[in-house]
Image (cartoon, rainbow, N blue to C red):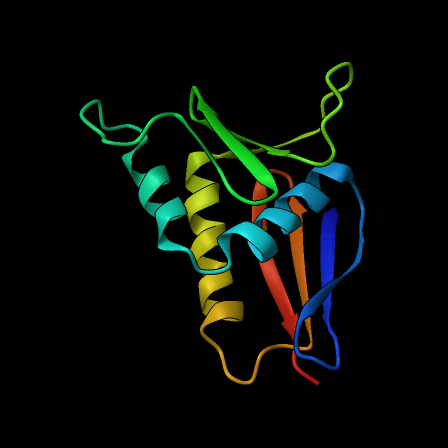
Length: 133
């Protein structure tokens, strides 16, 4: 099982709490820093299979760059780029949309915010666990 964890600090901001791989860290960084409820990313992902879409197959945020190819979204971290040994998070378009929805439901739209957020991957399935105490 792969994971990435964030812990809420005294200012109610999420700080990195560890991860099992660079790809999970990249996914977590995307969710926390770039996505964090921004509807654009879901609209982009939903439109990827539409030949008349106004969106292209790439997009980016403050710290991540996303590219779509053959059903897979590749997420690159702008500050971890190593052209000789690229580190990417790879996720199916369907799992990408699912994890955005789950982040919204379990992190963005809840009050009070969870004390810990753990993004887990088992096989090709991603899910989010939260701890509220």
